[in-house]
Image (tube, rainbow, N blue to C red; front, side, top):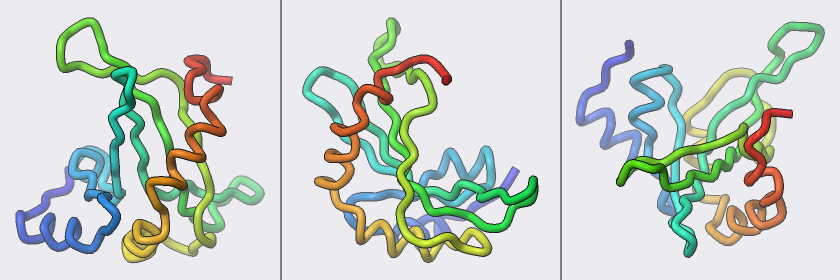
Length: 135
């Protein structure tokens, strides 16, 4: 399990803009540096936007990593304060494929991806975001 100091967290979090925050939970559990942002919707649901990398495969080999805006809808659970998510969400490519994962690229993209763009993508993909099945 990766370890992190308060100084490292503050430095990594300080490099992000537009309200994105360093995803500490994802780093501690999986070792991945990702940026995360949430929006509370009027019906009580929460839209989560994450900037991360997805591997690009060619003939069963990883040839690079695609920066991706990953959107997920969270619903209030039966227990107060708990949220539930269904399905895989929506993955939207942003930026150019990289040879290796670079947190600096995600930091730059956090300044490019706006709230309006995130909400437009979510509105256009709402059918898939509401689909709880993995297809």
